[in-house]
Image (cartoon, rainbow, N blue to C red; front, side, top):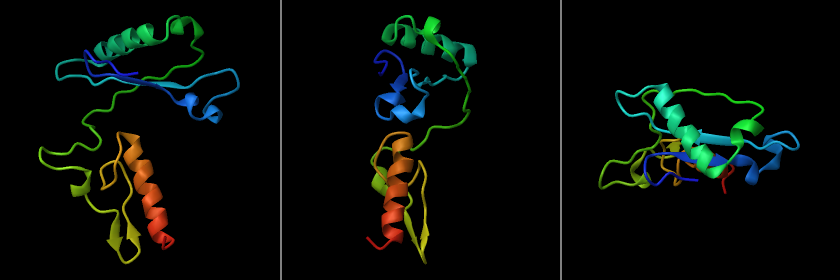
Length: 127
């Protein structure tokens, strides 16, 4: 679920992989950017509002929660006129491979890490 009015994103990871949570539970993650001058409580308020819209009654059903702030992190952000293809190459030579969220692999957020890891393995195996 994406917030189209302000930056925000929520995903129910157990929709794709039921093994990520115990039987009868769901794993939901929200990511809400915090603007300069805002604090953690501002981000939490926006996250809670977005969760209220997408998961009515979620507060009463929550069995565990964790919050964190990642300062100075953006993941892969490509400057104007560039794309993921312009990021550092996965194959570095001499059997060295680069994997992470800011390398030459397509995707959004953690998808870049997964995609680069899969590509690095294929290259290492000579595929």
